[in-house]
Structures are given as C-alpha cells and as structure tokens.
Length: 188
Image (spheres, rainbow, N blue to C red):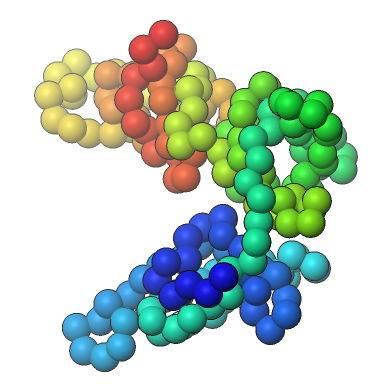
C-alpha cells in the first residue's frame, strides 16, 4: 500500500527497495523556504542495521502489510522478551533490539500490540501510559510548591525522570512510555 512520507509514523513498517524496515521515528520539517521534508529513522528487519532517510513529504513510500495483534507480556530471558497471545495461548519471543528503549516500561501481564509480518514480530507498541513508583527523589523544600518547578527522580524501573516538587519517594505516578515524562499522580 502506497502512502506519502508525511503519514509514516513510529512503529510502521515500510518496504524500501525490497527490504523491510521498522520505523523508529518520523519527523516532519517545514522550513520557511524550500520543500517540506520528512526525516525517517528506521531499522532494517533482516539484520538490525539502522538507517536514516530524508524524503519529500509528498513522496510515495510502500507500507508493508503488517498484522497488529494484542499480546500479554510474560517475562524476559537471555533470548529476549516472551509474550503470549490471549486467544490462542501461542507464545512468541521478541528480540531485545525490537523492544529497544521501551524495555524498562514492560510490566508483567501488560497488554501490548505486536506488529507481525509473516509470523515474525517486527515492532511493539506499549500502552501510552504506565504507573510506576518513585523510588528516590530530593526532599520537598517548603514553599517550593508554589512555582511549577520539577526535580529529578528515579522510578521503580530504574528510569530517571523529572517530577513536580510535591512528589515524594513511595508515591505512585503515571509516566508516558514514549519519552518517560511525568503525566500525573496515580489515582489508585
């Protein structure tokens, strides 16, 4: 299926010169003068090599047919991450380079969407938000809560992020999986 470059998103799979590539990031640039372009960072599925390409936003790209299936995360081992299909109970191991920098956000029994091409997992999509506990942060300074200032914190998955001044260790917060940014205090 042909689509224009500006419609390509992270997680899509494109066919470039007969090779399949998983899109890691796609960013549109609109300079004041000149042609708008789309910068696409991709990983070749066959060997894992990363490639960066720039296309005109109206240029046509071939999107590969990919089946998106919901899987439940089970565990991680030396080979990669193991997921189970909730309907057929079929298990699939996803290589670590496919999961990439999203690995810290995987939680047991979390439902994720795996993109499968001819039975091979090629991309993963996590829920947009995940609830984690703040393990370590600086103590709150009295009077500091009036301004919207942020302080560094370490979360239960080992990721560092910035949280508002009123958040203390032991507090459960909601974090965006795309960039690890603080979203809100958990409601549970």
